[in-house]
Image (tube, rainbow, N blue to C red):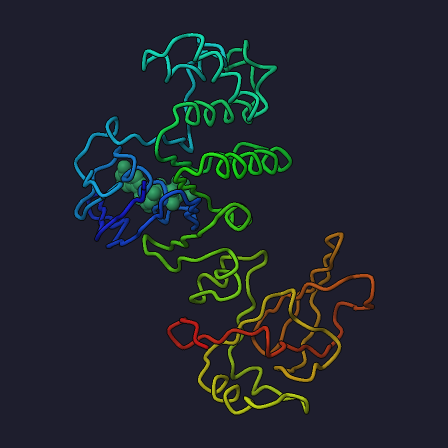
Length: 354
Ligand SMILES: Nc1ncnc2c1ncn2[C@@H]1O[C@H](COP(=O)(O)OP(=O)(O)OP(=O)(O)O)[C@@H](O)[C@H]1O
Ligand SMILES: [Mg+2]
């Protein structure tokens, strides 16, 4: 068991409160992703777990042991930093093997492990090169390899793929997922990229201004965002959020059985109605849903789909549609429907309710 428990952790830098008071349990063996915008405190939290930053108050317990005041070197945690440094005078092989050499492992063992990690990360052909002879992405993979080779009980990855191009990022992402499936170690992975979070995480912790907004699987966070921040931050583009007063009460179709009254009640209490862009229906009024008229502002073909920018009353709405079967024009007024089965309701404070 290598779970990480943070209890009432606060962190201040002078007058700046970065973490007001944070409670979080990271489960043993899970791939947990910390997701949040720049400056929300992700790196600070990672550094606190690693022991590189003191908490202002609160405690950190790893595997049942209070490590709040334990030195970083004694926590058996490997961190890959957002800005990492390789030893410039050492080859890739020696950079990878360095943590094992420090530990005094035999060179045959080191060689074997270096080969294995290099293969995992696509570095086998580069082992004799020096860091300055590598691209940014290759260097980043060496930094990853140097953490992996240590076989610590916990991995902390702070945006380790940010220097990679899109293709390479996808490749290393799947390598990391496979690596985790293989070793089943506790991994905490930081990103501000919600696609990365959705694809990799077993659990996502969404943060905003040092406060945890929601903890859940990718599906939970996407389908049932706890509040309007999560609804808007997760998804690309984020969930449409429209004041209920602008789009009125839902039209209940004839074949809608039973719970019509509940729906009307929910809609009546909602300050905002949310609908994901891919669920917005254009040009046809579906049997049950919020139906209104909007003006098309612009059309952006994305390849497989078309992004349609719309305006109704004071709100902007984005719809993703298949672009084969539509003949939409900017300036045109169009019927829009948020199907009942796909909408979320949010109260005045921004919290979702069912
Ligand atoms: N040593 C420090 N002294 C003062 N302020 C700091 C220090 N380290 C971080 N901060 C501040 O704390 C806040 C959180 O920073 P942190 O690096 O944890 O954010 P982050 O979520 O990792 O952002 P990013 O996605 O940009 O890396 C920021 O406002 C930052 O300026
Ligand atoms: Mg950071």
